[in-house]
Image (cartoon, rainbow, N blue to C red; front, side, top):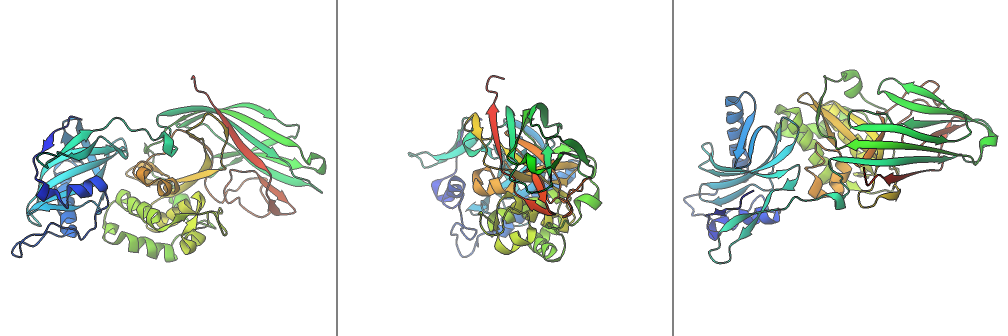
Length: 453
């Protein structure tokens, strides 16, 4: 994007563009003005930009047009960055807004406005970021103290665990049967091809017989084993070739509310989850599901810590709500419980993240994520990764990177034959049942990237 000087004085920008540069202003920060001209409050700036977007959306068949020297977009509002709203001087204001285009790409758009509350006009609009990656930054001219935009080279998220576009790798799933004193049964998920991943079975190394069984609600396939004491210590090795695409919002028919608005055993809806969701949303209960989902996503990022201790790893929304800690399963279960409690369809999936910074070796266990339904699309989210890497919070709202494999979908999975203990909570690792109880079967995931493909 072409750089050009913004002819705005240093005095005007003290509380404005410094906020843009460091992205950590306080909401109460404003430029000091004369007593006869009180500063416009942050809520008034927020309402001003919302009103402007609403009017323009109404005038343009339900979409908000955004044009600058490099873009001509038709957008819908996701959220206003209240942390970046600023007064630049008397009757001059700045707002930063997330908007989504028809393809599901999220753009961070900067607005400069002038005027009093209730009568603000936008004087300049520029597209700052695409899916969290900036096109430019701000820099101050040392001589005249004005600020100007500096174009940035295309940023790369690989060091933060993200492979964009496509990825191609072999995935190896290995299980060792523990010592058995009697009969046992085991279920292993089989990754399926879909529009975002092409999965080819390369080889199965095992002399233990298995058969495929279907889980019909979510469309999963599992391998089912009936084990005997003589299978103790044996190893099952399964290898796949996977071609994976980066996943963005994708169109789909309205989901079944009996499935995607329902309670699960460890992922309930209603009750305190409804109370929390409604308190978080407040006036946003009148807004679109897209805006509401972003508010719930931000709430979990702001209020949970990624920590592996206690009874974590079960995807228990109540545990997540009480402890405000957990791994990816708690983050996404909590989100789904909140979303479903305010009638936003949402769903759970689990697999593994393939390291982006090397091309072979071990994988640090399973990883799970979620999707929600809004505006006729399923929207991928990865809240635990956004919590770890806040720079990617915008990217992970609507994106899953290419370097992952999905092993199964859904919760409370019912299969036939199924465990005596009841439906399977979720499945990535093998589910081994001995005498009606789940027992951990030693397993590992490894990979080899196809670097020349």
